[in-house]
Length: 312
Image 1 (cartoon, rainbow, N blue to C red):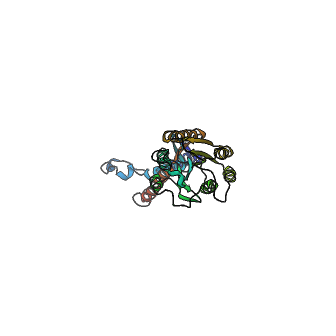
Image 2 (image 1 turned 135 degrees about the vertical axis):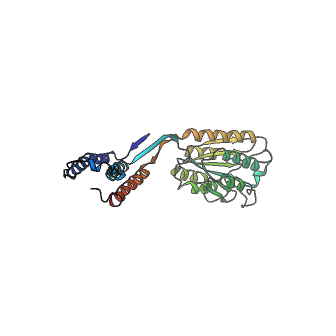
Image 3 (image 1 turned 60 degrees about the horizontal axis):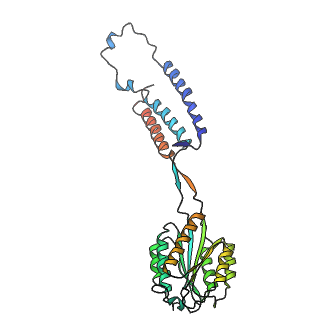
């Protein structure tokens, strides 16, 4: 469908009628007034091609003016409404890499299970910016927000205990994740925090970090890792409160399948929380019209001062 941004310029087309009237009257006045007693001697001369095309320059002028009027009116072609998905969600995964994450109540252990499921989750969200923060006794940004999910997935392979000082600084890990998202302009900002312990290190209290996340409109989903068989020291009260403060949700993962289902639920929750925005794709079409009009006017002028120079 074609629409016009500035239709008022179509009033310029009104110039064509008076110009045409002026041209016709002028042409009639310029016709020869010499009288001949007989035209018999002129019959062999014939009519040249210039006579047949003598009005061409003026016709080109009128066509060029009409084209410029259309170009000034800014024709625009609109296509069907499209779903906008490129401005999706910015997500940071905050992953506990303390030594306790090597417990084998998951297959092959908690850390590897968490990494594998996270990579699967990332593969299912191609339009989102996703980053990775790791924490133990301190925290570190393993990968800033990126749409290069292949590189991000590879960086998960470099995550293992011992890279950072041991311990569980949940507050620091959450605060670092918040710092990666606070300036984001995404529709939705999310942190997925996974840990198998309780906060025992770091300078930032977990609930203080949660309040900061809330200030920046960041939603935090917390996941406690660990089966009910071994002795697990997950501070579920704190993790639940973090999620409550930020409008997220707390989950308990007791095995690989449960962890996978938790990620699937988060995936659905985030997709359902965003209202799909739509836009109409509009292309400007005035440039080719203006170009053609300019060529036509130029051609008319060149013909008038060259080929038809001697024609009144």
